[in-house]
Length: 440
Ligand code: AMO
Image (tube, rainbow, N blue to C red; front, side):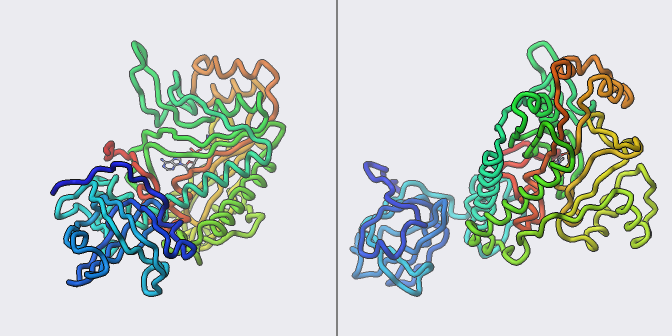
C-alpha cells in the first residue's frame, strides 16, 4: 500500500477536546485505529489517541467514493482524519466525525501479536514483549493517566509544604544500606553500584534544604519472582529535618489522602474504566496505628502463626493480616534488630522509631526517625557487621551540624498497582525490569 505523507497536516485537537461545542467545525485528528467495522455501505472507525477515542463514520454517498474506497484499514494503522464534527447520540461520547480526507501514515501486519480491540486480554508476558503497542490499550491509558495524576499531586502537595525536589546520584561507589541487593557495574576501571535507594543522600540534604523529596528510580537485585517485586523500582523519598517519626506519619497519611482525593476528583473516568471507583476510595485519616508487637500477637492468636519478637512477618502472615486489616494502617516500633543502621532506636533499644505503611497485605512504605549523632551512627554501622570506613564520605556530613531528621520511602509502583486493581506490579510500569526481563 502506498502511504500518505504528513505534509502540512497538523492535529488541531486531541480526541478529548472534540466536544459538542465543535459541532459543524472542521478538525484534524490523528492516532491509531482501535477498531473498525465495515457494514457494506457504512464504515465505522474507532480512532484512538493518547486521551481516548472518537468515531469516524463513512457513509457511501455522504463521503466521496474515492475516500470510501480508500478506507481499507487494519488494526492500529496510524492515520490522520480531516472532517466535520457532528452530534450523534448513538456514537461514543455523542459525537462522530464525517471525514473529508483520510491519510494513512503507517500500516501494521494483518495479525497483531496481541489483542488491541479490548475484547480479549492477552497474556501479560506477551503484552510486555510488545509493550510499545500494548501501552496504547485503553486499560493502559487509564493506568498511566492515574500514575501521572499521582506524581503531579505528590509534587503539588510537597511544594506547597516548602519541600525542595532533589536529584541524587544513581551510580554510587559503595553500598547504601548494607551490602545486599545491589547491582554491581563497571565504572571505568572500578567497581561501582546502582543505587538501592536515595537514603544517604536524602539524609545529607535534609541538613541543607530541611525538607526534601525525590521521585526517582532505584535498583534492587532481588531474585523474587512475585507479583509485588521489581528490580528497578520507582519511589517517593522524603526526608524532614527537625522532626521525628510522628511528624512523618502525619505527613504521609496526608499525602495518601490527597493523592486519592485528587485522583477521584480529576481522573474518575480512568478509575471507572478500571472498575476501581468503589474500591480506591479516599481513606479516613489518621490511619490506625499498631505496634509491631500488637500485630504479631494478632497474627499469632487469630491465625495460628508462631512469629516471635524479632522475626520478620512472612508473606503468608501478611496475607492473613490483610483479611483482617484491609485498608491503610501503620505498623510502628519494629524490633531494632531487623532495622537498618540509620534507624533511631526507641528509649527501650529493643524497639526502633520505625514504621511501615500497609494497605491490606501489602507494604507500601517504610521509614522512621534517623540517627543524627555521628558516634552513634558509626557504632550502629559497625554493630551491623558493616565497615564504617566505606561510609566515610557519608559520615562527613554528620560533622557539620546534622539536624535531627526523619523520613520515608514509598513504592510508587506498588501503590499504583493497588489503586488500579492490577494483578501484577509489572503492569504498573511502562517498561518493567525483573530478574527475567531486561527488554524491551
Ligand atoms: P524499603 O526498602 O522498604 O525502604 O523500600 C521502600 C518501598 O519501596 C517499595 N519496594 C519495592 N517495590 C517493588 N519491588 C521491590 N523489589 C521493592 N523494594 C521496595 C516498597 C517499600 O515499602 N530507605 C528506605 C526508606 C526510608 O527509610 O526512608 C527504603 O528503601 O513499597
